[in-house]
Length: 59
Image (cartoon, rainbow, N blue to C red; front, side, top):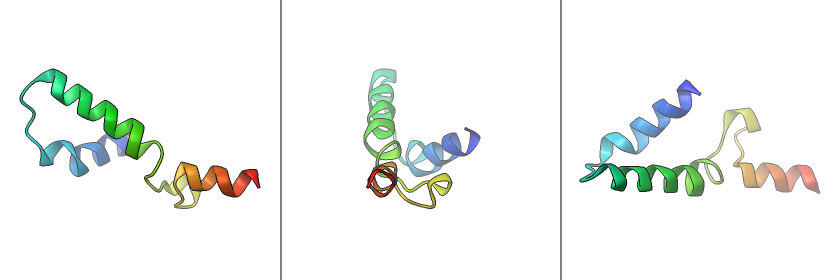
């Protein structure tokens, strides 16, 4: 879990300036749902995205 937060901060949060808390919350939710959870390659999944991993293992 710690590596997730490090990745989030380094790849996304430190690169942006948010004007409001709501803007930051929306961005973070969107990042987690759209990119991190579905598209980003994960070492625990043999460096495949969750979508790729599901496709490979459901065939």
